Amino acid sequence: MVILNEIIDKLKDVISESRIGKKVFDKDVADALGIPQATFATMKKRNSIPYAEILEFCAIKKISVNWLFFDQAVDMLKAETEKFFQVRYFSELRASAGGGADVFDENYESISIDEKIMHNMVGMGNTELEAIHVDGESMEPTLQDGSIVFLDRTQTDISKNGIFIAATTSGLFIKRIQQRVDGMIELISDNSMYPAQAISPDEVTIVGKVVGNIESL
Image (cartoon, rainbow, N blue to C red):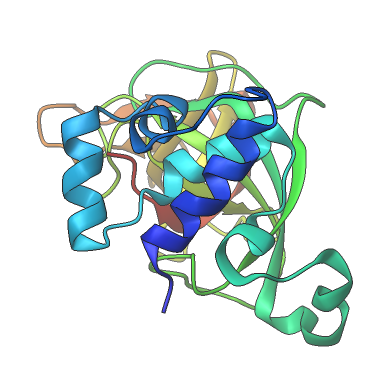
């Protein structure tokens, strides 16, 4: 079981490297994660771990997620590769649940993530994944604004149910996708407040399927 108190102690060690001679408190960890101090105190009491915020912190600081959560160094991953997902994390990239977002670029961090961290994982045959943020509310309640989703580029068949990342002339979208009988591609939101959008098939490329997510606060 992952214990938040133990993670906090490690985060304090990381933060203290830039604060030589200064004691690091829980409020400093909360600030580093971008979490209100009162909320962080409640999470600590309940052992409720802010996975998305910690993943962002690890990417920025270039530290191992597996070391932080499981005391596993990189060499230890070689013996149990099947338990880990190799993830290209695009911390600056957003897949829009509303309007279009930017296309993929080369600005990413390569990280290894234990499967215990992944929620609602499906289609786990591929362990080479990509992670980006959701921007907007049109996929709520399934995906929250600000959550991190894990993308499998090997799954592009929209005839199978699921949520996909689509690259269009307007940018990246995260939607349920169907092809109509007239050939048009429909981008469908889970939030009923957002109507479906129809675009020509030559204006969309299916990047991959969302196979898991980590919710933000």
